Length: 188
Image (cartoon, rainbow, N blue to C red; front, side, top):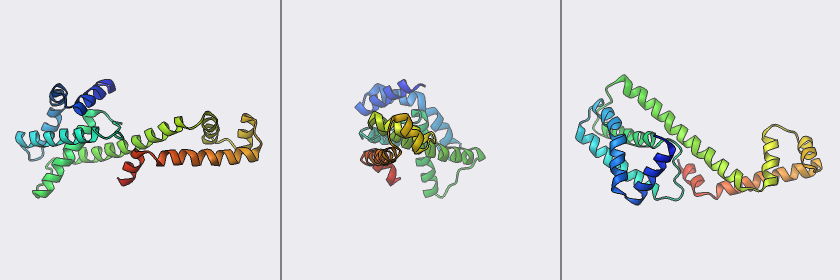
């Protein structure tokens, strides 16, 4: 399923559209159902967990700072898997398959990837919001150019290029730190 369809479904969930919820069951329930069955669960367990997942996705989607950086399938599966593993721990049952352990590792990596993608999105968003001059200067800096090269390219003195670079970096950092997504990522 593509990003456009994911965003359409997410918008439907945000609005509480019954068709979007039905589509989520159609597209995503089976994978989570299989995982739970392979790890000491029943169909009823899978349905309960999927219900919880949809509530969480709905709640998260209400936040203005929520950004879906992975596929909706990955997001739903990772939430459902974590809920199920937590229940197993509470019941003192452990996942029974090697595949489950490998999947857990993969999902942890996926969760880390989601966090990394969120940070990258946050950086790119605010990088585009700073002025054109700052963007040009920082791009040259990130390419490893020295202050003299930057100054020559932008027709500045080397001292001014150094001061301007520091100012642009501070501006970018302040902009990022003021974003609610930054605050949410910092809590994780």
